[in-house]
Length: 499
Ligand code: ZN
Image (tube, protein in one colour):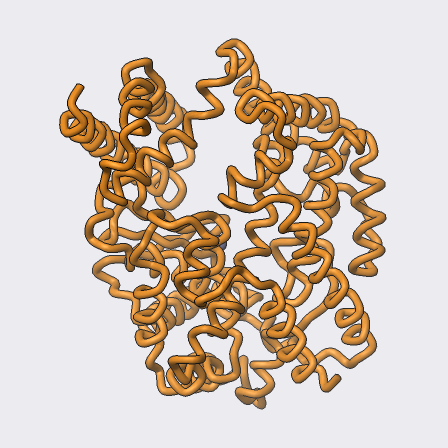
């Protein structure tokens, strides 16, 4: 086959896959937002049929040959096509090297694990989940050895989620996080917490919906390109730069919850809306990695959204909407309340300061599991020990301990670090941005679009064309450096708590 012809075939295949993913994504969004409860049967059936079609479109000898041919001639390809081939090979490596029967068995165990985990969590009984977790750990260790024989299994999985990252880099990263944050959190523990009860008065959902509209307007999100829905757990999905969907959840006794979900998910949406036009319909549409995606959502949520400048910008409007609930509260009190830092049990509810320690605990446990140094039976004891040591909290039960996250039940080991890396990327990106922009002044004046413009030019437009480490170099002019994150947190929280 001529290279020209092979490229044409690749693009046709991508177009077809992209159309299927678009359809499946809309079905999923519909199912999670507005479909009636009993839609589940038909929905699952249709999704299974469509997944089989997309699976067969990628996993077949003809496609393997096509990708191998293009890989051999990669020097002749343009940058986007070359990266499309590289990513497709990456995605197929595991499937091509794993015996079919084992892979099918793995998928069976995975779906079993999901329902077992739900039950174990509801009953707060780890012993129900342990046997299936053990199987998943074994599968993951074996699959890593099929895909990359001779490589450390945890390094293999880390690289799957955050391309280019290994334990060597992450050990150093987390060591810095641990040694700086554990003492900082301890000193804050001795200080008085700011008043925050006003965030938990009654905030009717219909009024919070109006606040969401206002926040999206402040973020300069074009509503003709981005819709908002309501789900149990907020998420973002996108099909092309003119069709993004974010969701939120309204708790009438917690103003902060939906407010920061909208800003966080809005950040994810802004990232993809800023992709360059060439990526429409390409598998490279989206974000460079999980960590880079989180870096953008957390940039808007924490670095912008929890800054003094932002609170000064939005507080008058919030107060106008909720005059009775916020009687006697000023912008400074609001700023302090939304930045409370307190060790807690649940990762997804953790504040900006303590968040990375939750991730570090999971990193240490996964590392030992992948190396066969920790028996799955001993996970709860190790979990509880680390929570006490790093965060100073006692874990009362497994539901609020090692059964809280769904990741392991889905067979994901190595995903967690990207959550923390996202925050660290964000702090380094802020440092680079400040060399060119007066970020605080722009935010205070309601010119967040200028911040977005900078991010678009340095990060968003590339979609998945560049790897995360490469993007950091392009954007910041140097390699990834966790010191910016440590300094950002130390400065912000020392000031907040008067240390
Ligand atoms: Zn996110």
